[in-house]
Each structure stands twice: as structure tokens, then as C-alpha cells.
Image 1 (tube, rainbow, N blue to C red):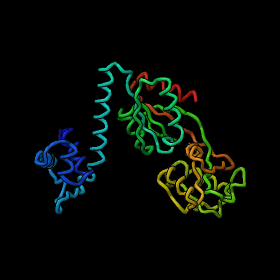
Image 2 (cartoon, one colour):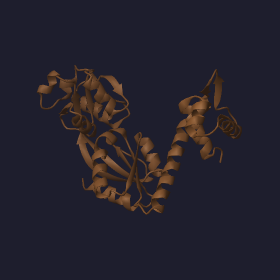
Image 3 (cartoon, rainbow, N blue to C red):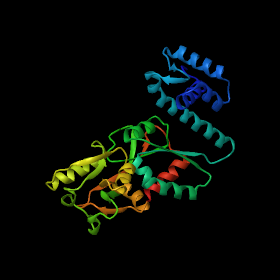
Image 4 (cartoon, one colour):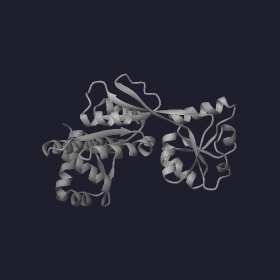
Length: 292
């Protein structure tokens, strides 16, 4: 093992806090112990993790590249420890999910609430990530189930179609188009539009809808997540065109929404590994999702 769990934990504290002193206080160890542990880690890694600048430690480029993977490894260790405690104490276990951000704000919260009502003894751990990251976590058996939108295209996972939701719009407060029951490409052509990145399924379908209507699509503001797009719309920056699952969260926040016409459906999908049997908790959650 190149890095021990203790070394990863102290590395994380130094990365987050910036000084050995603060890291030592947080980890309840001495400053020399932190310094020695970092030196041992650097010796095995073969490169420096930090450079000293006055009283602070500046992470090297190598440390910056290593940090996300260390955080993922620590999260995985924490899940193993929690599962071990649950099994030792006779609890019913842990359900782990990886979810794309839109579904994390739309479809999934209500489903977790229903699941926890039926299984109050089960703990749930949810991680958000891109569709590619969700698929990788499922394939690597780091989560029980994944939830994504759009095509999957990976033979290592089993895919189950869930519910559909249609594209829609989030309007700024008091926008004139709120007088209409639904909005079309023609309605939006002259508006300031907010949407997600071009490679995301929502944007691909939106582009296609505008092309079929013979209208040019011009996105003025691009957001990495639908929640950011909703916040921009609420602030009056423009009209956000998003999938129906994102609109679920927007409506719960009291934002003004309208459907896009003609209807453009988006498919939510549940993923599991082909090489791993589902736990009882994961089977129960999957059945509940499939039942709607």
C-alpha cells in the first residue's frame, strides 16, 4: 500500500486547512507527528506533496491531482466501517446510491423518503456525479445502484427504465411568458436562455427540438448543474430550459415553470452491476422505484 488510511486522513486535513498546526489540532495528534507522517508518505510516493510558504503549506500539482482520489478512498473506507458496525450491531444494513445532480434534486429525494418510511432501520448514502462517474461507481461495486438520464451504452451494467419527464422552462419572477400555458421554440428564440453543457442529454434534445422547429438555439448562460440554472432564472438572468426532473425541484421551491411544446421526454434509468447481486435493501429500493 503506497498510502495508509492514516496518511490519507492527515493529507486530507492539511489540504483542507493549509497548516500542520490546524491539521494536528483537528486530528488530535502532535505537529511533529503530522510532519513525520507526511514525510513518510512523500518518500513512498516519490514526489513532494506540499511546499512551505511562510507558515502555510502549498499543495503541489501532484497533491492536487491526488486529492480527489484520496477523498474517494476515505469515503469508501468510511462506508466499509459503517457497514461493519451495522452488521455487528444487528442493523439491517446500508443502501448506497450514485446519482446525477438533476435526479439528486428531483426524483431521488422523494423516493428516499418513501424508502426510509418503509425501512427506517436502513441507512442511505447518496453520492452525486456525472453519468460517467455514476456508471464507474456501479461497475466498480462502490455503490449498490446508480441513477442517470439518457443513454447508458455500457454492457457492464444492467439498465432498467424508470419514469419519464418532459423538458420544461423555469421563468424569472413576473416574466411576460408566464401568461402562456406552454412555451415553444418560437417563444424562446428571442429570449435569454440558460441551459446545461452541450454534451448533457438535456441540451442534445433541446438542440434537436429547435432544429426541428427551424429555429436557431442560442444559449446565453451555461450551467454545470440544473440547480445553478434554476438559481440564475430566479435571479432574473434568463429562462432556464431543463428536464422535467429538475423542474420537480424548481416547483418545490416555488419557481414559475412551464412545459416545453412539442413534448420532449427524458428517461430516467436505474443501473446495477452485472457481476454483483443486489442486497435486500437495494432490491427493495429498486422495486419501489420501478413501481413509481
